Image (cartoon, rainbow, N blue to C red):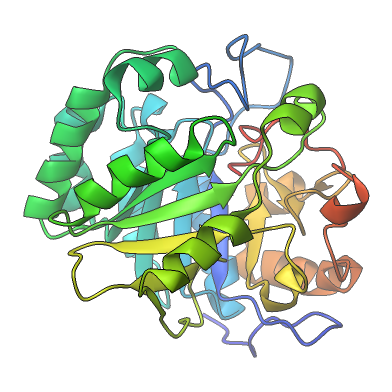
Length: 327
């Protein structure tokens, strides 16, 4: 394996973190993402395990240390354990993560663990069973929480993602705080982002994460240092809580200055930003299995990465919904 310097763009940002979508299919109907459910469209086949392995080898050569397998809903791929194993066996990859809605978690988490999973992110926007069912279209929160308990028992670092929605935000915050008293997960509040399909919903439901963050600081939560392969969350701890809280606030000033991640879609397109206008098709190179050639192609393309996502200007790029390239 040829080892290159860490991938760096024209703004001095270094990229240690790859988000690799393995499918854009999702079985949930979340209000803010796919309220009508997943709509199938003609597209190229998803990357095979061998093709995904080529992608991960190439990015490892470029300094990537962490791979997150995302979707859509990655558990809908029956070969997800093989994909996890491929990531685990890639020289240079130190952390393997999966983001999931948790629908199948109790029945699959042991196989993911055996395949080499280090970190799990589960999306839960409310701890109220009825509200969760209304948001997602599935009445399955108790099953998901049982899966989280099993993941923790297996020693898997577990995070829970919750999209901030203005209506009922304080009630949900108090529910989560009670849970975090005794549950050692990291809860990450994610500020609702505008996409091509949710403009009206965004206008009605957007809540700035800075409002919640200030409330936490005033309650004694303290900011932790950020690891080089960490996601975009600012993470807080409190001596009275077993869990932690993270804030992802894409509309905050200089949010993009600390960007350390790139995305590959399930069809093999490089997305330099979640909100880029279009992906850069790498499938032909991926199919050759030549990780060196793929790494050089990615290095040549990184100069096209913009300084900002320009969300603050109302730009949503080509992102119609967050299931397309894993959010």
